[in-house]
Length: 391
Ligand code: SDX
Image 1 (cartoon, protein in one colour):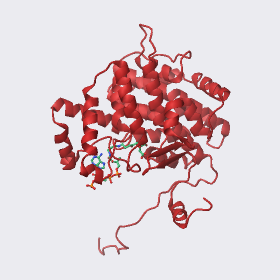
Image 2: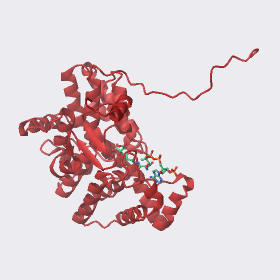
Image 3: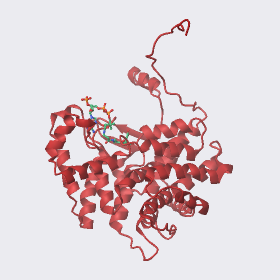
């Protein structure tokens, strides 16, 4: 922070967090992971290569990446006892509740290696979480379907394995569809980090108390669950489905949003930082057209989404409030075309965001300068008062 203008210095002094991981310029629509543009990463990288970049700060060499992928592949199995954990939950359990509880429970198998100040343990838990979160997610999905859990297949890549765990079954071979693999790889990369969003700030805050990595990530999953944050991708699909099923015109729905009828919002629109456009939304929209065309899927919900975007971008109400599509607006249509039920969408967001959460946890929890998090407060309550006599 040397050589900053007085204004910037003032900002730095009040900024609650300093980080070297992700840079966002909300007005210019810029998003960079460790200096690399999201557009380059989405088009050229893989989920695990970008995860390495976020966590270690540099792109991995070929051998570093190969070793990282292999390590993760070899840690995908869950302890058999943990599988019975799922049987205690109703099949109607929301996958995000299953995910946060299972991640918390996961730490009980590693009580001897949770020390946040032990570098080897931090490495082990980084690999354990990256390897096991997708398996837990797939088990939550299978449980909701009443289908048997599959074991990971180490002959497959990270994304291929995840798709097979979700859509394969014991009775027949599972055919890998490269369209789904490439689209999911890109979507996961687009979600890997996003600076100090609510769930990442939660992970950093919990990690600042020297709570272990699993407890911190479980807290982040719960923060992401909220419909104003990661839960928005599921809420967008519910909104599109309701417009479709009710036969209500897009214009009528937009009017209801503008009149704030029953608190209705245009889900998937707006952002705390992006006030022109969310660069990820543009890339997701590109993928939506490609994936649905490649899969030969014609989904009226995509048409409704495009109509909604067009109507909002031409409407003074949204322009004035700088409301544009965010990363969640089009993702649900793609996930649905892939075969994921809407309730699993935010779980996919969590798998995407995991490398960013881990990178931020490591940046904060392993930095000796980190103090326990304690957001500042402006007290606006009553001044000192005497106790009423005789009470
Ligand atoms: C994510 O922070 C991150 O980086 C998050 C994320 C990440 O990668 O981690 O990008 C992921 O969470 C994306 C956001 C997903 N959420 C949604 O799509 C839910 C719908 N969006 C809104 O709830 C809202 O836009 C927020 C919460 C995302 C941002 O809210 P802001 O910037 O604090 O805006 P605000 O609530 O102060 O609203 C300003 C005005 C208000 O109108 P007025 O009171 O001035 O009349 O805009 C209106 C709001 O009513 N408004 C909306 C709206 N969002 C804001 N009106 C209709 N629809 C919306 N979506």
